[in-house]
Image (tube, rainbow, N blue to C red; front, top):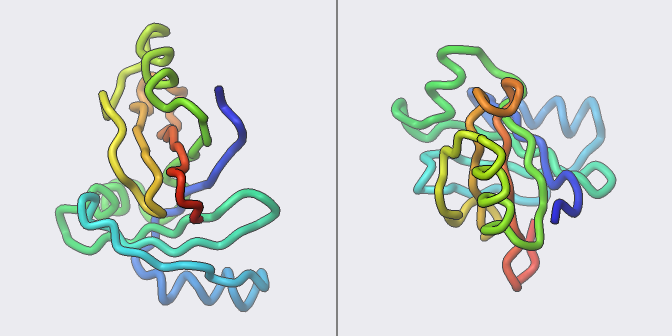
Length: 138
């Protein structure tokens, strides 16, 4: 069911500031920026091989990313696995005792359907399942 690692999420205070490292130091190109209103976050995507790096900037003080940065600082936020059947993946995680943050998938960045597992049940790593919608995107 898991096809590959889709992306790695990095929490940042400012995408504008963080982009300089990814573009100037690493030589990567920002392929897309997007605001995900439901999560109160702005994202920027870079591709390395077939894996994306997703920068996550809070758009409000009550954003989950703002809370993360306040508690833990900028840095690694989550790992996302691409799946061909997100509903089945959620159910399998539930059956194996994982604490679900999302019982059902919702639309995330790039139009993907996404759902998260709580780090308390995934060895302290926020884990995301994502499924690409029919219209391809980042």
